[in-house]
Image (tube, rainbow, N blue to C red):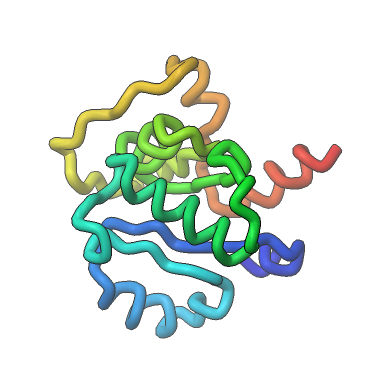
Length: 145
C-alpha cells in the first residue's frame, strides 16, 4: 500500500463487509491512511459481484479525480474472491487481479455465481492471479516498462 500510495495512485476499498470493519479494523491495522475512499455493501444494498457496487467505485474515482471520462478498464480491482472480486470486477469492465492465497484462503459466500465477461477463460484467470500481495509491486513495475 505504501508503494502504491507513494506512486500517487488513488486507492480505495470496495467491500462486502459492514462499515464496522472499515471503521475499526483498518485504523487498528494503521491501514486507513492509505485509502482515499470506501465503498461498502451497506451503502448500496448491492454487493460484489453485482455491477452496482463496481459502478459506485467508478463514480467515487471519477468524483475524487474530478474526471468523468475515466473508464472502468482504467481501474485495477484486487481481491481474494475469484467470484465476487475477480469475475465481478471483470464483468463490470474493470482490470483485476485475483489474490489466491491457496490454503490460507477462506471462502465466503460460496453460493455466489461468477458472472461472465468477455475473454473469460482459465488462461485469463491464471494470467491475472497473484499469490502474495507483494506481487502487486511487480505487476506495476512490469506495466511501467
